[in-house]
Image 1 (tube, helix red, strand yellow):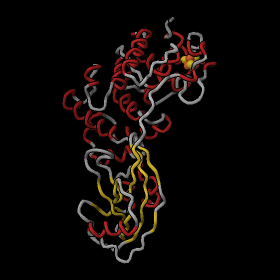
Image 2 (cartoon, rainbow, N blue to C red; image 1 turned 180 degrees about the vertical axis):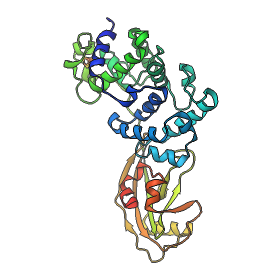
Image 3 (spheres, protein in one colour; image 1 turned 90 degrees about the vertical axis):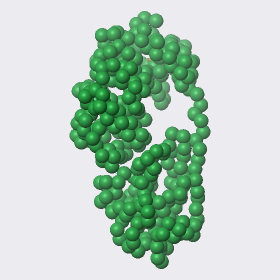
Amino acid sequence: MENIAPALLDWFYKNRRILPFREDPTPYHVWLSEVMLQQTRVSAVLPYYERFLAALPDIPALAACDEEKLHKLWEGLGYYSRVRNLQKAAKIVCEQYGGQLPADYAALRALPGIGDYTAGAIASISFGIPVPAVDGNVLRVFSRLYNDPGVITDPKVKKAFTARVMEHQPPEKAGDYNQALMELGALVCVPNGAPLCDVCPLAGLCQARAAGTTAVLPQKAKPKPRKVLPVTVALVESPAGFLVQQRPAKGLLAGLWQPLLWESEHLLQAEVLARLAALGVDTGTAVPEALPAAKHIFSHIEWLLSGVALTVPEQAAPAGCVWASREELRTTYTLPGAFAAYKDRMLG
Ligand code: SF4
């Protein structure tokens, strides 16, 4: 196939979106933006990106940030392991590289939370190193460009596609080329709905377009069905606020805060009251009110939430819990999006 870079780059320079991390692509900016953009759309990321950088303008500031503040800065983006890995890596960068990301693909790849794609993006965009940065957008473009039915979630197929990506990469414009491919995938060779082939700079070369197969490419493995788990929530409120507890330091939603809850159990109101009493909560004459049912989808699990709200007399919090006022829930304790259905009620 004819080299795609000239037409692709020409299109990119005329059509690229102006984004803050593109205008000032320091290694920290590119790193942060790429981590935020995993699982999240650009438009949703922008306000978080600005707020995060205003609070933590460089890698040493990120390394030194306390956990609650870090979670608050990420609140709303979800997948909190991303920000915890970001900080773990920042600490290593401070210890080993004087607070600056190394201009070396393998050294970047060795940092927590930095995979092939993110290492490639930082190395090529910020340091001009000619390496690939192949994300889902790029795989989709190459699947269609070569009319290749390979299953893009298969590591062997990804490797073969990556080799093709590199056949076209101009070494002196590695970062622009990688970004142009991602941008084409995001704006033109789109994932949902028909690709916009009429405005595609690669239309004349595209084998899927010629074959009429764009709608069935790329091929992906069927996702595994998610495990569905019932979760019973108790929104316990006293004059001191809501009773919340911190989740364990490892595992799902690690270190974040939550109302009292019982995972994998659908409890009746009387059972919730009994569980609260067993924890030492004086429920007084509280009459529980049923909470609306809600659903939250994680990557491999689906929570079906139900539960009760109740108001109890002022008392000490049971072990491992705190009473958090609405103000503290807004500013200090991070409640993950899994509890979005109950947040209005808790935050006021
Ligand atoms: S011509 Fe259409 S299918 Fe082919 S790369 Fe361009 S947008 Fe994608």
